[in-house]
Length: 141
Image 1: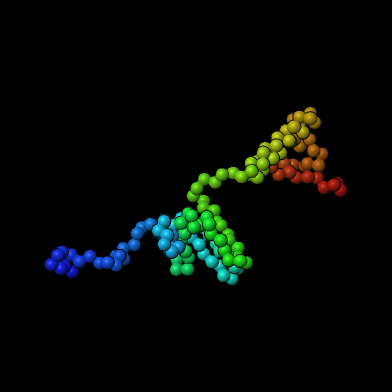
Image 2: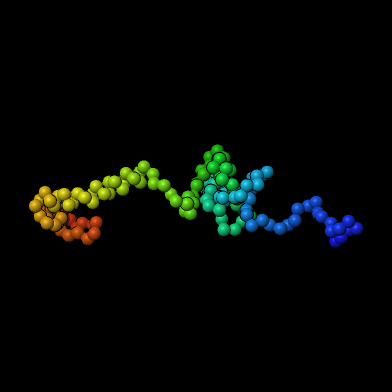
């Protein structure tokens, strides 16, 4: 509709939706990075990666609000890891890897000490080996 001065401009924002979803928190206009869902039956708040599309009973949160999220007393917050970013190994992961390397080196050490060329002769209880699995002789035999 036009007036004498030109096209009318509405004071109400247009219904055009931005392709970027925004944080659901009041007065926060930052882009959403996570989706919050409540599981009332389990008293659990689940915070995960941004959902593919907006759901009516889910809340999109920006990075700041998702980090500061707390649940009501008696509720549990479950934070699902976002698989898109590179995950850094924890101290436990590195220790487990070091232990696995040490364990893999041990059968060769035992075989060398026993003077045999194979691992099978190193352990009298070992009957066969397939990869990292061993078949052991029953103690009664």
